[in-house]
Length: 433
Image (cartoon, rainbow, N blue to C red):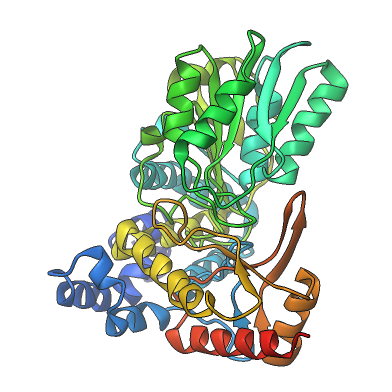
């Protein structure tokens, strides 16, 4: 073998494994540092580790977030760690050296290792996982794919994500299914109240219940498992929107007892923007039609939901590196850190005159997201003032009975950032007449 051929062979051998090998970019950049940091806090509970600023400084340095603005809208989309960005850029450059070769003959071999990695994180068999682009695509695949007929009822809420609400309304308009929406006044600190509302809405024609695991507007954690158990006792299936809970809350997907699950990976997993995941209980795959065409649409292979044509192989490598990053921290440790950050600022503003929180601070009912309002200001005015005066980026929420500003930290957020947020809220509230 010539030196040139040997070089090509070694390059290809490395590419075949990429983010899913012992020589992943994460391993090269962070494995030793993270291992040492984890060793120092190994004796601490996740709740105790959440307050170890030296440990989290190690994590913070792995991100490249702007120093010009403070990003507190991670409930929309989160920045990726540098190593994830590097993976996408590296494999994008490689793809462009010869797209049809490097994409389909080399990088395409990363899809199955990625499926296995996501299954490990989700606590489920790989044959129940499909990789796609976001929660909307995953959940719309299920919503449009289920064999519902005219007169069949679906129960959701007015606080569910609009893209899912619109999907059910379209099926109602086009096919005559009946879409019923509950409405909740959050925060609610009683699971039984929520479960009873769903149960009371059930009729003999109810076929499906749609539950948002974490209400994205205000961060309410919904009792998915209790709702699913109640529904299953009545022969009703459950679809779970896990866009804001996956890689944030420490759970395994089967623990929710739902039948169908979709999530975005570019939120709390910090995977590349435009990445998502679909989960369907294995015995139910066969009856769900794919959103896009497949040669065996009623087959039992989860891969029938991945036929989107040419896709981004670099993003798949980036997802793999994001999972590496997540596993190195540990989901429970991450959950407790982000909850600690949310409570850190929220508890400090709770007693400021005119300030109102729209989210419970009890750990079983919220984690990262918290809604806030100031009497005398619209959500839009508060959002604009936070950014215009203090360069703090949040998002205003006005939907149904919810009117607030949503604030969402992430693992890269510092206490100094949150202290600045608290001071800003205090000054803004003091000026309102």
